Every structure is written in C-alpha cells, then in structure tokens.
Length: 521
Image 1 (cartoon, rainbow, N blue to C red):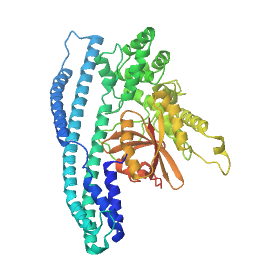
Image 2: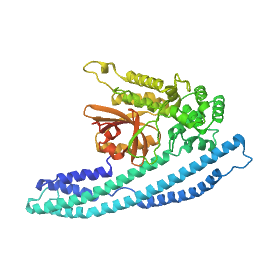
Image 3: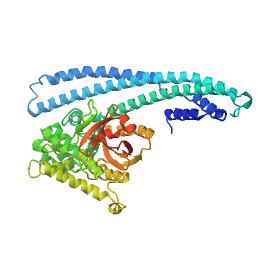
C-alpha cells in the first residue's frame, strides 16, 4: 500500500509529464485527484494532549528521583550492615538510575510528540492551502476539455493550458512538501518512541521469584560506559522465560548462582548466558570461570562484550572496537579474506552469547597466559570465521572460472539464522532494497530491530564489489554500524538512504549503496 507521500509523488509525475492538447485530459484527472486527496493523517490535538501528559509525567518522576537520589548519596540506616547493607545500597542506586531513565524517557517522548504535533499542524495547513492553485488549474482545464476528459478543439488555448499546468505544479509541489515534512516528523517520532519502549528493560525481565529490586539491579547494569547494557531488552525477555521453564532444583541452583555473584554485572552475564540457551550446568561452569573477576566490569567487558553500544550523543567517525586481552587484538576478519559475512556474524553471536564470547577470547582458560592472550584469541577467532564461511558455501562456488568468493545474501540469511537466531530465537528474512524509497521505508524496521538488541546485516555494493556490515545501534537520526574490518562507525539515516555507505569504510571505496538487509521476522 502506497504512503501518502508516494501518492502525491505519483500525481506530481503525471502532472509534470502532461504536455499540450493531448496531455490536458491526464493533467485534469491528476489535478482533480490531488484536490480530493486528504491531508497527512493524524490528529494534532491528540498529539498535543499526549505530549503534554508525557512532559508532566517527567516532572513528577523528577521529584521522586531527587528524593531517592538523596537517600543514595547519604548514609543508609546503621541497622543495614554487611551483605544486607550492600544489597540495599545497590537497590537504591539502581532505583535512582531507573527513575532517571524513566524521567528522561518521558521528557524525550513528550518533546518528540509535541514536535510531531507542530509539524503535522503546519503540514495539514500547507496541504489545504495547496488546493487553491489546484482548484484554479481545474477550472482552467474544465474549459479546455470535454466532460469525457478529452481536449476540446473548439475552446483550446495554449496559454491557458500553460497557466493551468503552472498552477498545478505549484499546488502539487506544496502538497509534496507538506507530505514530506509530515512523513519525516512521523518517522522521527516513531523511531524515538520505539527506542524508548525498547529501553524499558526492567519490565521485560519477568520471572517467578524475581522481585522488583532484582529486576532493577539486573537490567540496570552497565559494562564500560553509558547505555552499554549487558542485558538488553530481548535478552531480559528471554531470560525471564528461561527462568520460568526451569524445574525446582535447577531454579534453586540458578537463584543461588545469582545470589552469590560478586556484582550486578556478573549476575547480568549469568542471566544472559541462560537467555542464550545454556542450561544451568553450563551457566554454573561459565560462572566458575568468571567469578573471580565478577567485581571487575572492565575484565568482564573485555572478554564478554565484543562491541561497545554507547549511543549517547554519537558523532560520525571510526570508533575502533575494545581490544581483547592484550592491546591490539580486535574482532575483525583477516586482511583480504572474503569472510565479511562470517566475521560479522561470529561477532554478533558473541554479543548475544557470553559463554561463546569467553571461549573465543580465552579459550576457556581465563587468566592462563597460554590461552588468554592476543595471538591465541586472533587464531581462535579466525578459525571460527573460517568454519562458518566454509560450512556455508556451495561446492560450485569453489570451482575455477565459474566460482566466486564470499557468501550471497541468501547464505547470509541462513548463517544469521543458524549462528545468531539459534541463540536469540530470532528468524531473519532477506529484504532487497531497490532504491531510495525502499531504503527509506525499511529504516523504521531496522531501527526497531536494533533498539530491541537484534543486529541487522546490511550488504553494500559498488560495481562488482560487495561487503557485509552489521547495523547494531540507533540514536536519533544516526545508526551505529559494525564493520568486520575491526571497528564501528556512526552514519546518518541520510547516508543509508542516499548512497553514502562508503562512509562506513576507513579507506576509499566505491561501495556506497545499501542493496539488501536481513530483518527479523
């Protein structure tokens, strides 16, 4: 189904293509259709009411945050000592952080809704005003055509036809401007609200036996920076379901592992491992490997979180990934290897599964210099990339002359489903992007996916060259992209839509066009 903007654009093309006597009928038909076209959909009054309600809610939450933050910055009652006191302080801090996020979310949602209200109000007024020139064009054309829409030779006047077309073009241009403004504002509002909704992690971690305090401390954890959540929205939802599926004995063991953890970060990684499909025995074995470092978020982040997702105030430019082990080790494909699909997918699986990440970074022997070092990590990572690459190719792709390097978009979809979907329960489909409209239309789905913690593979091409990247983050009108050459970069939505994907590469390249994405179903 075409959008309002696409309908206006279609009428504009018909108006632009109508020339001379034999174009008068088409011109009149398009003008009359434009006159009947309703303005951009939506109710400015309803948006204004909702936006103001969000701003008021933000103010009320801010008052509560001040009170809770005051308790957190002061001394807790002397009766709360030992582990009880530590837990209480943890809950108070998490509560303050959650209230701060809640107030910020309400404030941002309110601002975005009020902005949409203003833009929509102006767009609807501009659309209505555009009918003036169109009515004028329709009246002129009525004298030049018969009731059947054919040109009337007895009353034909070239000058009046030119005047009618000029008026029609003026009116449809104003309508298109109104439609574009409303669509862009609607996209910004929808993307922002999707992002804010995805950020409500505490509500997603639902399981029997978990208190509100548990949810706050577990979902509010950060690894190495602002907004770098360990347990993302989808992770939290899967973890809650996994906890509820456990039998009584396994649930008791899992609860004990969580209770004995050295930090909220360690607990979050344990839940993330459970969410990735590992049984309690595997989670317990994983905890034995990381527990001695459970209170060191830097150690945990280096070995269990391949990619930074710090999306606060992003700026364009290359952001090299956090080194693993010794300085210089990065999550990247070997130079000149045709393994971009495999390399990016392996990294995404490691983002979703901390047990898998630890095996790659330390070989299952954290702290042992024979395994936990840069060169050993690089060898394991390359071997894993090659496993995925070779296991995904058809035999004929290796034949001389007719064969070719790399993996197709269909194979990329299959690899994502096998390597990442098996961990996250997400099934991917391939979406070809035929042009700017297709890329613009798919943006909201891409942003909704990554806001929920589901990476989106994207193929970029130029000439006979192609490369796969992963869209992993979203903030405002920017997308965070992981390049398996070993870094992340922020690009704008316009870069994605208007063939400027070359900005994701740290060297000159003709690969500017996004030609397909793999979207979660």
